[in-house]
Image (cartoon, rainbow over all chains, first blue to last red; front, top):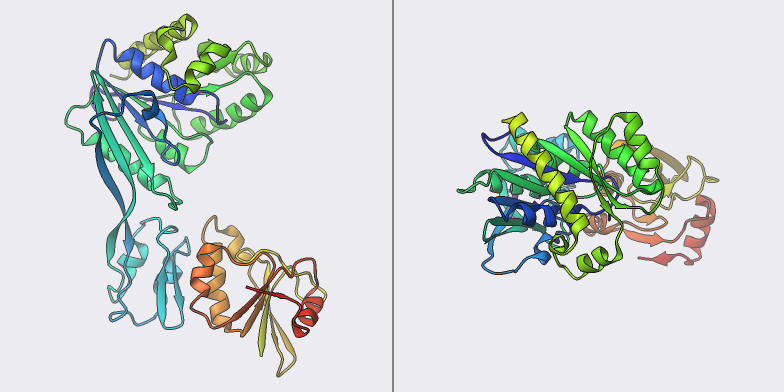
Length: 293
Length: 112
């Protein structure tokens, strides 16, 4: 547990479009019938969790990252900054230095190592975080500004935002970006447990293997949720069994469920199969809460 | 005139590398001395990000009058190159350096 008494559940996947948001929004809403829950959309490049809830009383907080601000009057053009920058975000062109804000990883190397202190850091807006309270559900959603290339700094800023909330629900659900690259690793960073959502297709299996490999490398406890069960084949089930990977729940393939989701409705209220899957996950969450407490 | 090429190889027969930031070599031809100068740009392959700005800086240090390349620089590299007084010609891929140079002399290359 990263915070006493708080259980953080990340919902991730290798493949995109397997049902992370379907599961995150429905699970959060389902659990919030009985207890305080926080749902955070960590897919800052294209967040959509808030579409499923009423958009009232949103509190918007701008988010900044720190970037170096070149001071021509102090600079001696020694070029140290360009050699220190691993991301080529600071380059020297003749008698001036250019900083590329989108490439900067806010590592402070150029700034701290500049012998003339000619690169002081200054805040640079990268996006915003919205926060709203819907009965027992707290919804946090971060969104990168158009043109911003880096999701990771905003994901970390969102985690900090959540850590600093006054009322922190004991259950926090983190809807993660797809894939297995830096944004996913950042989004599951503080999670106590990860649910990997997949689908029973060759694509789902291929990307599930990558996601499982990632979770093992970063030492995260995880289980699998199979969405759209009944389509495709048994390869995911068989692979999980051979690998000793637990399948925590299965959501049957159902056209009506897809229609409800596409209409931004929380389908669990009407869909018994989905509700049953959520009930199973609620039991698992209770067990894990005890285990990690 | 000093003419720079993004190049897949090290001679006149080499193909133009269509990539700007991740070009394998930067080849510089000095018309006054008729010398061909080869600069290995492979170090940039190890970088996940910022290849465009790194190569822009390298080109700046070579201070050519003309750059002949393929796809052309991306947005970020273009911002860096704006500060250089250098003519840029693009869409010279599928040509050897020699062919590209001849087309440049005949003013048949597309200016950026």
